[in-house]
Length: 288
Image (cartoon, rainbow, N blue to C red; front, side, top):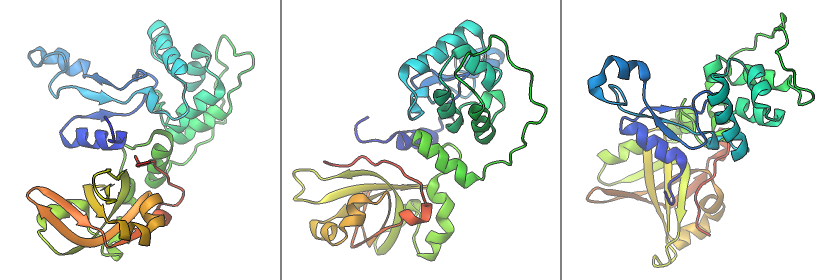
């Protein structure tokens, strides 16, 4: 899909009413797929194969950073041969994937269907060993540690770190209160404005410098309400080069420009807000 980041495509699907379901070892193929709800489809045969609500998008195992394609395909093959995975230990034993692959899946929160969220899944994965995998599971440990749930902010940042997107919340929503203090408006509010100086901020999705634009850089940023398009002239780019070139969480201040339904912010000041999200990181699609 060219310059469109996966997070942007998923967000657009959700905004158009398409349910999106997370990566899961019991449901995901290597690629993203469409799936229905069998129980609904069975009770409403007049609605067709997908059921009442139409198809949902299931994120594929390829979304898990660091998971090899042959490992993803082995998961699918084992699932088709042995049926649904019931635990992380059983998954490891049947799939015979290396411990590092199981840890990546746990960190990506891919064991939700076995009632194991990210933190306990990662804990269980640490206890696995690749040496002499047993044919039968060990008896359950009576002294299992009751780990506290991970805060939403950590969950979202972990989702982006392991898969490049999150279905739980948008990272910018985590710092909206601090953006209010900076008088930064949500991107969606741009639609109701016709002129004036504005301040917007979001994750950088795309940086483009077309050869025919005389050095002008076009940047698309995204917050929890939508996207905003920025125009950065060569002079502003040089004046604010570190933020313009490298910021993954960017604030832009400048006049709003509207031509019909096309809205841009003509950036006059740029600010790198990466410190607000700590160690969070996301890759943008940049010109070279």
